[in-house]
Image (cartoon, rainbow, N blue to C red; front, side, top):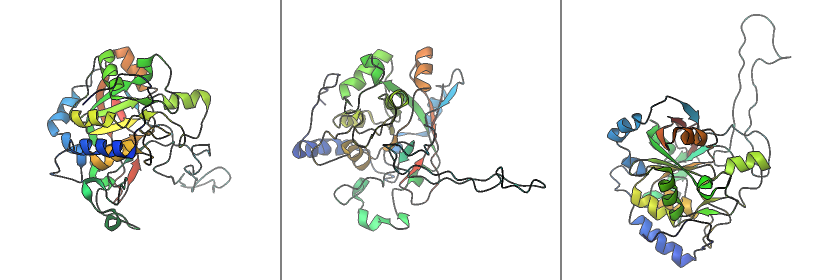
Length: 317
């Protein structure tokens, strides 16, 4: 592929250019011996064993943000966490009692860390692999390509590319995007290379900006990947893509398609996406240890028919 240089050049794609890109990316899609797993097929048992060798110090951190229960500009339907059992003022005061609670949340919102299943993206009436969407998605859930494809967990080598560090800024501003050139430049600067079966994590600084400047409507403005970067991801045969944003930038860089990276990654490549993670604990550890690869463990809920799941990924250095 022709790799654009690093930096925030604004390059929009018209419908024809996007369809041409989509065709190229689709031509690089993984073989579909087990189509329900998509690009997870690149992650073999041998690669899992090798990923365990990434553990040297035993330090480990979460890549998930705390579940957000406050209503904010980007979170109009926040998670609800009611206490349902013993609490102060509602206890008998003797004998055995239990503190209990429940959680209700919008899995695919713009705040909480979550995994997108392969049934999440409908494009032109189909899901990944050409599966008809109308016959697959019902009130009972997804009849195929559900989050249960990853019910045994996703364990492999994680690689973090820190794009704000590459540009010597604390974060990318909403609307800025990450090119394939940025990914290659970050590899070189950090002395790491992502490849087949890896879980690739791309930091844009979304969480740090939110922490320091406060929430904003991320549905309308956020940093993310340029759609053309998907071609590099396809060539490198990664298994999972994750970001501290939702991987797509806003406003969209493609006329008529609001989430082009989701279309290319999920619908064409069968990549499970991890959206709205946080790397503010991991990045300093990687910098201190001067290495940007680690053992990564992702454990989605075993939710039959689910289009995604809240997740708490763990990085082990």
